[in-house]
Length: 150
Image 1 (tube, one colour):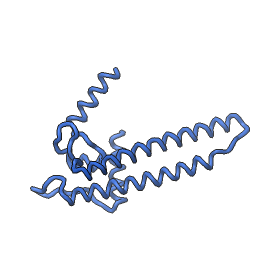
Image 2: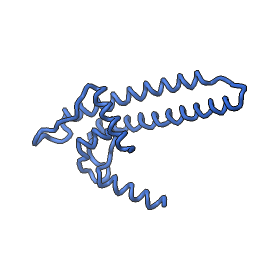
Image 3: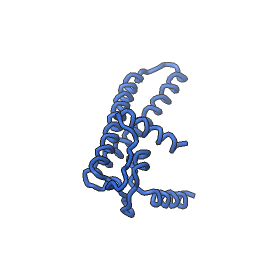
Image 4: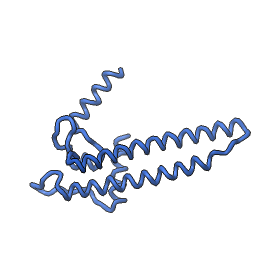
């Protein structure tokens, strides 16, 4: 279900950026200027959206800092604040990933697996624009994590 949400979010970002899924032409060079521009627009739109959410969360936190006398109300308020802080942390992490991905665009390493240096693929990058591993390397990474945390 998590992957479905990620894909829905990326489609949402595509529409917010005024873009449609990239249609790669036959014999088109991978990560050409047109493709790079497409992904840069996606990433910058996603970053703006997250910065907007982040500033909204900060405003909400400032508004909720009321000292309530009732312990149940106070506990409920603290739970809401904790949830806001988790959301804020998640937004910061996403923005950091986006910034790192934009740096990879500048360094001409975007779209290629950081382990084996093969093409990640247009469809995968549209579904997860911050992906830096191909499917095979990502699968191996997840298998290693499962073995370590069992």
